[in-house]
Image 1: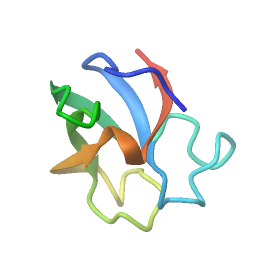
Image 2: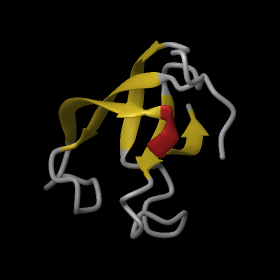
Image 3: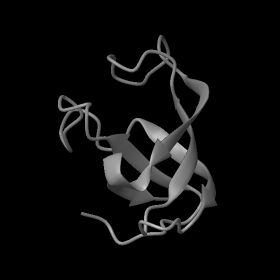
Length: 81
């Protein structure tokens, strides 16, 4: 589990993307754009730029062009540029 909050620019994956391993998607499937929190339960909320199709590996046919919010409770840290 990652220490939160993660900084803007960190590359992450969603825990429900079990296929997104360090081998399949080493750069993650989303990039953090904004951080909010902590909330009463200690969680943070991240606005991320995610792949268009949640179930596919990011790439030319599935660009990171969809903004959405993910909870810190569902994020796996990949790396930071």
